[in-house]
Image (cartoon, rainbow, N blue to C red; front, side, top):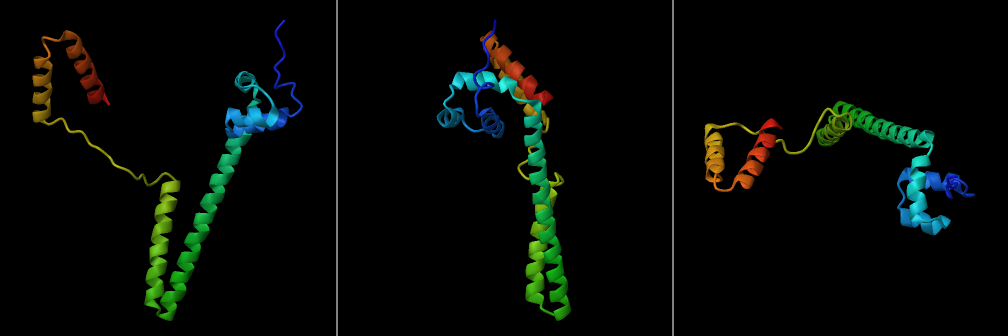
Length: 159
């Protein structure tokens, strides 16, 4: 007969489950609740699906809250811009424009409409194709290395 999970029968099971769901380090959970790392590892498979979904729902709610805050900042920046323009205060208007632009960029990034980072475009130039052929041909004396290089070049080309 299989042994009962020591964490499932632990008096503080709910707190342990919550700590596991939020990703606390096992060693911290062990220190707080007096369990073993092995027991925690085995118990992770017993975590209720509802707790995992609750964490996801919490993350979605937090993201929605952040989005709302950025939208409120954008509305405030546009309101200040309008007031400054009506008052003829060009310096404040320019500041509000800068803030509105920053908010727009942040909103676009949060909504996945703006991706930051470096994009590398690989072009199959004739020089590159010729270089590949020279490299592969020079590896004729080393069949294992040649196979590895051909495999790697094929993966790069297909990606």
